[in-house]
Length: 211
Ligand SMILES: NC(=O)c1ccc[n+]([C@@H]2O[C@H](COP(=O)([O-])OP(=O)(O)OC[C@H]3O[C@@H](n4cnc5c(N)ncnc54)[C@H](OP(=O)(O)O)[C@@H]3O)[C@@H](O)[C@H]2O)c1
Image 1 (cartoon, rainbow, N blue to C red):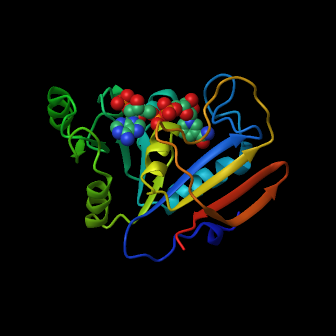
Image 2: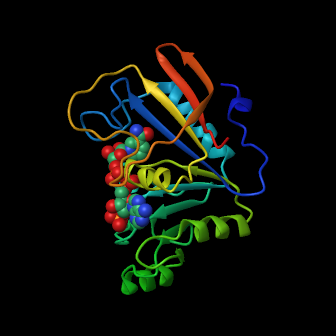
Image 3: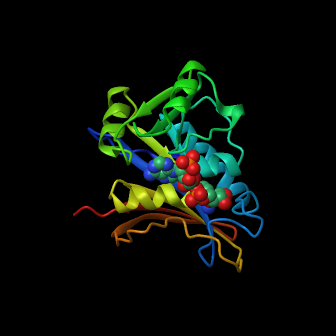
C-alpha cells in the first residue's frame, strides 16, 4: 500500500477523515455484528496506516464497546452522551468528547480517573468547538473510525472531509446499518480520489466536493 495515497492535505484547519469497511450490499458489519471478518489483510493494512497518519482517532462509544477498543499510541477520543465508558479504557490515555449536559457525576468520576473530558455544547455536542479545540492542540489530522451513528451526525453537519471506504467481497443479508445513518438525512457530493483493487477487496478514498 502506497502511503502517499492517504496523505492528509495541507490545510489551515482540522481535516476530518473517516474510515469504514462495508460489504458489497452496503452493510457496516457482518452477521455477527462486528467488522473483523470483513476486508481482510488489505483493509487491516489501511486501518493501521490511517492510524499512523492521524493525530487523533475519534470513535463513537457504541463502536468502542462492541469492537472492544483499547488505547494505543495515537490519542483516542471517544464520543459519548451517556458516558458509559468501558472500564478498560478509563485512564489518562483517554479523551472523551461529550456535552456539558452529560451526567455530571460521570464527568466528575472520569476526570478523577485522569480522563481528559472535552465537554462542548449543551444538549448536543458543539462540533465547531470540538474541532477548534483539536486545532488548538495541533491535531489537524483527525481520523474518525465510526460508527454509523456518529458518522451520520458528522455527515449531516457537513463536517466529513473525506471517506476511506473498503468494499469487502461479501454479501450479507439482514438489517445491518450502512456506514452513516441519521434521522436528518442529507445528500453530500463526493469526488473519487482513488479506487485500488487488492485481490477481491476494493480500497477507495472519497473527498467531499465543496466546489
Ligand atoms: N463498517 C465499519 O467500518 C464500522 C466502523 C465502526 C463501527 N461499525 C459497526 O457499527 C456498529 C455500531 O454502530 P453505532 O452506530 O452504534 O456506533 P457508534 O456511532 O460508534 O456508537 C453510537 C454511540 O456513540 C455515541 N455517539 C455517537 N454520536 C454521538 C453524538 N453526536 N453525540 C454524543 N454521543 C454520540 C453515543 O454513545 P452513548 O451511548 O455512550 O451516549 C451513541 O449511543 C457495530 O456493529 C460496529 O461493529 C462498523
